[in-house]
Image 1 (cartoon, rainbow, N blue to C red):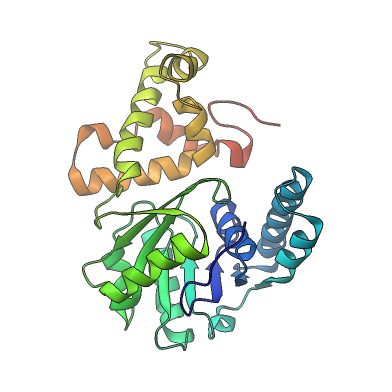
Image 2: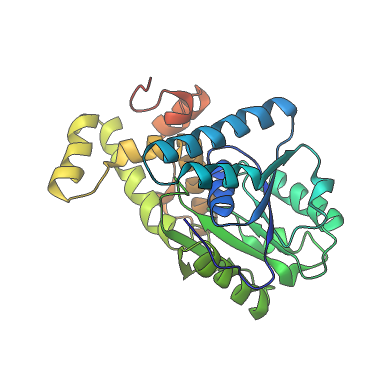
Length: 291
């Protein structure tokens, strides 16, 4: 993967090195950008680093990157537990847990530590209103949503979500970054819970969960029905496991809170599975069991 510099965006910060944060960092580093990744603790940082480097190694084993490109990509990555090291970043992408309070606090810190006057502060949120994050800073015109999809190194789509406060210049720079630097296909969405993809996807996943919960069909028959009958690459319950059941529930809650549509309400089974720590692939247990 090679990229074209997006104007003056050469140094990227990624807050969070979980499944999404590691994927975003990998995409940026493979595109030739200087990437600094932050986590809250040394332990979390080491887990994230291992996750990221394992993904790069697998890409090399599959012939997606050469040994030389692998070494160059790894050299572009640095890691920290101190957000103060993001002072020189041209763009910072927040990719932490889907929790409004946590994200807001991070944006308040970034607003203080990122010193470049034209730096873009972006969130990978899949449902939280961007305007709430924007007004937590002193530069709401430079805050935008840049929503990647899992797995970020593979999925071509990026949603760009400007808040009411986002300037046209910030939106244009973000689109140039996504399309020219990263080689993604960018679509624009209004700052409404669920944006474009999740507004369509989440009700579909919740319907599949309700069907399984009510005993209408087995998990295998639900997934096979959509894979073999509708040519979907992955059935809805497998997809929910891949996304993370906590994320599905969080997006559903956000959408229901905004629209009050019953179809957006999380089914009881989904809530119980999240409470039990059965979050899908990330916990090796969800609707299916993983090794």
